[in-house]
Length: 452
Picture 1 (tube, rainbow, N blue to C red):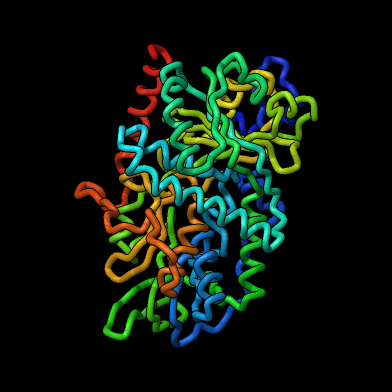
Picture 2: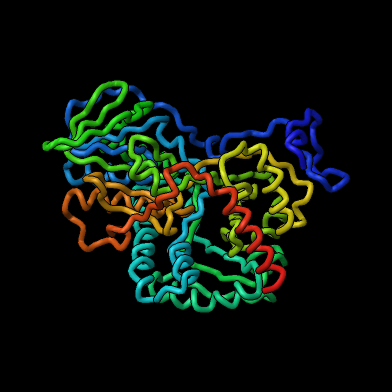
């Protein structure tokens, strides 16, 4: 399907006669979520001359850190180069995992369960944190704790899930169980997978409305947020930090870096430790109720064990399918990737062939070289970085934990707070290798599907 086809001026029918997809000429290239809350600049505030803590980045991590600091009586300001929420916090798929992706690293690398246990436990804590924030503050964001089905790309992938189920249940309380292929139709309207794993302690939500809820909490608490205020320089002295912006400088005792997939040249020590990748998403037109019920009979969220990942779920109103994944490795126009995601979607759900796509968008996620989220202190800068594609709960939690560390109230050491945050001598922050990695992943996926 060509990009030109997406831009066709001919209005498409609901189902094209030839079975091919006719994309709407009115295809929206902003997130569907922005129809409920679109990031906009906040009213301009005067920058303070001094602050106890300056937080760079107004995403999930930055706002959770600010809320905890203010609650503890610590003065802070949040600085964002764009409109607050402009990045991944309002553009992601809205799937909230409970440690599933953390466990994936340890199984893939054959590491010990003892080593994995504290990370899985803290990933479970991250889920508890976001669930508590939403419930205590009655944030209306479509929170649906309806389970997550992880489809097995191959027979060997399904066989490997047995160990993962036990580990997730022991250390993350994931309520996980295996679903053999002959029973997967109970959970997903597709024969595409070789069975899978059901994880009960997961959820999905409306990411932009969760973000708006955090913004509202910050406004009520008196958190200072400066939008359209990029940080252009950081300089350390004996008394702390000088944070320079085009609107003036701020003297800060501590600085928290919470820029994730938008980490830039001001902090090169972090830029070379995170790999920004575009995550691409499409949304279908509103579907008949009988079709959405057939596709997702229990309103699960979905992903698979393919290296070229896909993830999907129904919209909070249950009327659309939201489908995302690594359509391309690197940064490109979401109009170019929409036909690829459409093909992935129809591979899994042939009954959606001919469905119109109304929205296609992208946002950056931040991967790390060891595939793990990180928080801590490097060069006297606090940081919470590296969502690795699971940022809603994790970045909320690591921002909260970073603030507790500054306040000195952390009850125990967070497993993600450790001194090893790897970089590589051949990587300086420009992800030149990503397209090659994508080709390698596609070949490995083909081999697994064909021979395993």
